[in-house]
Length: 510
Image (tube, rainbow, N blue to C red; front, side, top):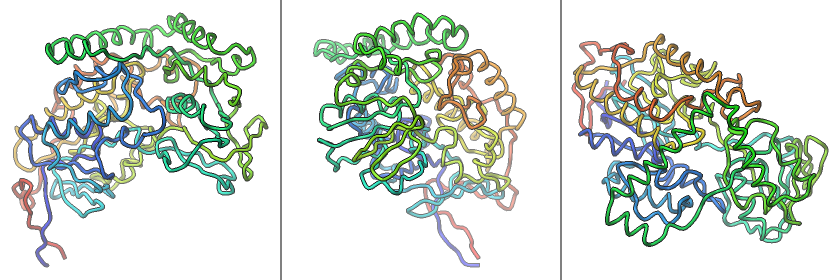
């Protein structure tokens, strides 16, 4: 046996987007300074670093899509673009002195729970460390999903996903295929339509698109928010309150959404005069069943003479020719996949091995489920930010993230109260009970009754993504950790070594 040193930390946070940086700020506020933030890329920002495609912007108002503890009085627009949001996250990292905790280019390769030491072994691209607690904040919009289209290998042109935009490729004059009609596609289409030679949109399912009430925030407004900070909070509160009132229609009274559909149809009718094209673009499901999109420029772009809409999904590629499921063909020079992300099958789950030697992906084979959207049975001291059934269909995910950070803060307090080398493993009955209640509420929501097949649903047709209630309800549910919902696991006496505080810990290795 030879002595070997390794680094041990109290908490390892994975990811440096909103969830990861938020967790880091909250840990510091709780007095926990012995933590690291492991980021696989060379900069912070998460999805707002990766998604830099033309026209990329948020569909939630800026003053609501930001941390309550880090208000920004200088948002330039009501709906800010990607670069501004990324700048905001960089600002958060600097303002809250997080840089010394962040380790870039440190992709997590594997997480393995040690039943004797009661810690996580964390293997990264830069080496290995151990941690008492792991917070996974990789987010559901981090790993692009590209369909395996027959013949893709034969395509001689350029291919990339919207989340991995190739800025070195010049689209001017090219024949471009846009695959998909989700939130990214409706921003990309109008952004590139004027410069491409021809744009062919492959639409499997038309989205509902509402007008986007976007405008410049005036200098006077920004001055007021700087001089009187409470006005920023008032603005945020109003934006939040409106969306809380809207939730009832999504979760309890989907039939009331018919009036909203009329607004969306008028939005389409103003730009799309061709009856045949309008028929292609009109959804046959209840609005809200799939994510509602916001745009004032999408429909006008589709009405231009250099744009074709193929109302069918891409089924095959033969050289430069793309073939749709309905037999339509289009010759193109470049393919842009706007086909979303691995949301219900998050890749990080394949790398997490719990107390029973089973991966989180295997544990979730029948569907993702986590107690209060945060913790999974068999994975002690492991918490997910933006976990199962924490997504939103009409409001800001930052509200949900902050609620989960409240839960994280109390989780750390409970571990300190219990004392010693200890772990909390959510009881299977508690996880199942929570999940059953969530799924029971889900039955009457628009996401289950609206007549569509959305990315909210997993391969079994179960909605493991969206929260079927208000953000207020979720905040109440995650305000405190109920230790009765957990098994308290203590280390054997021989293994109960004192925690190191960010220093080298002595271990033995064969």
